View 1 (cartoon, rainbow, N blue to C red):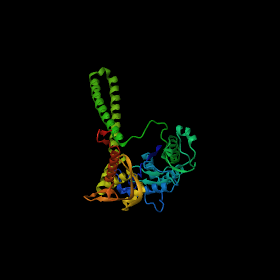
View 2 (view 1 turned 90 degrees about the vertical axis):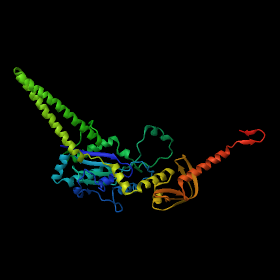
View 3 (view 1 turned 180 degrees about the vertical axis):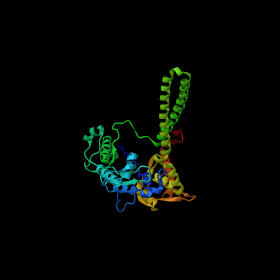
View 4 (view 1 turned 135 degrees about the vertical axis):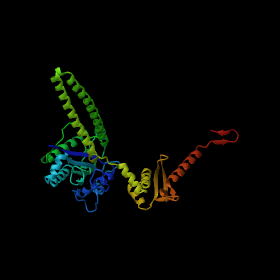
Length: 405
């Protein structure tokens, strides 16, 4: 029997890069684009949802979460489901792939909740059939507490409802639950000739770069071993000719050495085969290269990101940032902005905040407050505070006795 493959990984942000990989808006090098038409989404999105990224956001917005979600909070968990290549090939050839997909979706819904499972895509354009599933970690009940938090419970006067919805990847990815996932998934996949990996095994996932590095080291080591063994074989062969009286003993050693060399050659052939096929099975996802391509195709994106980051730093919420990028102005009677440069807040009255293009450079943007670049406004406000402080501390002058400190 082969092994059932189940891998869970926390995603960061809206996980748009992985959405591009899963939905093939960017074609990976290890995929056969002539077979991409065979890929299919195993779930139906809600009417207003068009893709995986929107499905993640839709689930969070409609889960009834009362707590504020931080910008760095895990919003989705990636789940890859597959099996050993030979067994998955047999499943496909036996016409059981649709049943295998259905059983995988049923297991995902039962394990993580139907509403939390927002996407499941079958990929058939790579070497081994597999499913990329996406789960939004919405849980209910009180969160797990540390000992210190439990000790301080007496000081709390108001408890939150025990059954309120929360976004918490740590609860879903708890160590005991990860073990239970592997057990129940292997049980569901057993009828396809797939079993659980060895429990308690010291084996761990390694990076693609480390995988290549280890293969090359093994390859070079085997080559050196074969060269050494070949030299030893020649020496033994010479002794056989020179020591006819010890023919039987020498011949036995010679045959053993020859078998050892054949075994090493077999291992070398296996490593070289892996090296030839590794680029298809373990091609690294070139995120940086793709980002560079995006910046080339959309030169204003980097500038938009810079302005968006500035808005976040000075205290503007994400919804207002979206309004600014839509071309609208934000107005208010009074608002306090935080200056990262001066590490303090400054208050403005009757504000009109908008995003403009720099007058001397059409590819540069600026965030203006009442028509002034907000960075210049911060500096003016800081100088006013400094001048006020200096005036308050100015020494008194006594005409008869000079300066009085």
